Image 1: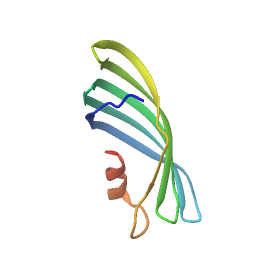
Image 2: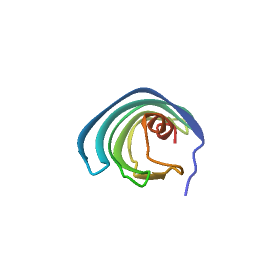
Image 3: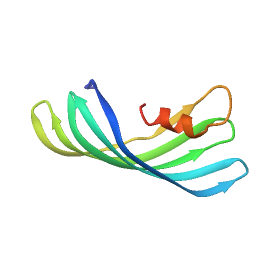
Image 4: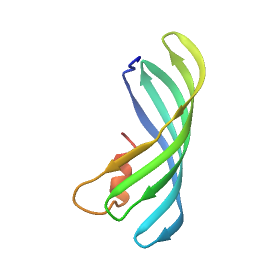
Length: 102
């Protein structure tokens, strides 16, 4: 498996709740990012996110990146499934900001 090293910056984040029930919330986030390092370029992703009452956030998305890897330029798509658990209570707006950079 190839490993790439680098960083990213979130350049925009637009998240909308589409369902809320029993201390659970489901949202859709449209996010733009800038990548630097082994993979450099601009990307956008649509994440479907679910915040559970036990402080777990799950999300999945398809991320389109236009950039360069190892001297080759083009576009590629990443599937980004994640599950994040935070100790100490429910997820709030500050926690969403931390999730953006993982």
